[in-house]
Length: 358
Image (cartoon, rainbow, N blue to C red; front, side, top):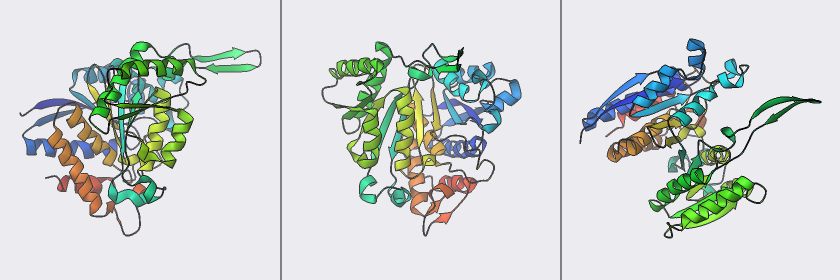
């Protein structure tokens, strides 16, 4: 079936404006090959939006995101805006989009391309064959719960945040993880800190209750500090990891580096409205404008969009296959460069993936 979809394109800051054209070009080409039509509508977000409007998430951008079929996001943030008050910082746009779009689940795959085994800092026998999916709760926990703030005290100031979760929030993210595991190797590790945190005690209790409806999936529990160690020591033991917003933020970046570069990996944020797709790396202001950024994570995010939002699995496979072909031909951006590889920039890497679509 041929489809016509409207996609909100939020390039953002840093390397965002460099990597987003790469995914747009690839999606347009895949659309033509499959007889589909994609309309890309740009809008300002993050620091770019602050410069234009004074706020990181203008109403115009939010309304576009809500009315679109999916959202592609580049990256937000940079040192230029670090001195702003908290509510006006670029990163608030991400939190606002997640909250307003109801994006409660973040899916972050960490799968190692065989061609990049030597790009990892870990030994080949430790990482070869890893395929981990981190399911991160995205709209609760310490990033959203209140009270929070900074207050004056007799001796200076006191900063505080609140880690809180409800039964409903834990139940829905646990279901996402168990459903994902059913399509994979049927193993879920639930990561918490139940030995010291009451919120984690509830997390573990609710996950165990949800698991009663998924007896075909194995459930294991692990403390977050042990998980951080095990991801480096024996990452192949993991299939699906489900955890809180804060723990997931940290562990997913750690899992990403097992693959050799954080620039390689995509993510999908899904929930009750439209899905949002973005690479897991940041805005990388140190290499912005230098044609050095790795666009593969952004392009792979586009593939996830086709798969999860539009049910275009064949077209998603086409993109992922093109990425694999380019890597097998020896082409690398600076972050994954190795001996006997061919160094290319952002634009050339995007064009090479375009040329290998079939």
